[in-house]
Length: 184
Image (tube, rainbow, N blue to C red; front, top):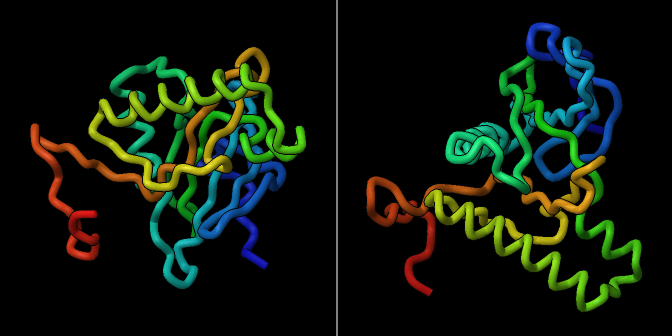
């Protein structure tokens, strides 16, 4: 069982409320920003875990690049705060709804052609915008697309940028990392 995160983060700015889910390298909790009362998602990554990859910092940096390029970029969660609390890296961000995978399971993996077209259109728009910033995601799957909440329930968000990286830097293709395979 993973260690429980702190009850507050960001010098008391955010209160951690209840667990929403967990992945390979972290946990997601529902929280609240105390001053505004806004509900947020808070991701925790245990820095003391074996092979802790520090993916949360990469995700935060990517979301900041996206926000800097277009403050109102549709389909990307807004990052509110990043920091380290005890043994955890923490990222407070916009709370989202169900994943595309959950929605597909809910409808028996049968979508209408119209729904497929609308979903694919949003997926392509998210990827095109990401690539226009010289970024690649590197973990595209239905679990990494989530629908918004409230009036944004029909907006599909691309999430989980922990494996992402820049492929274009200083007007040229970024060199591959030594551990990455060359060519196809």
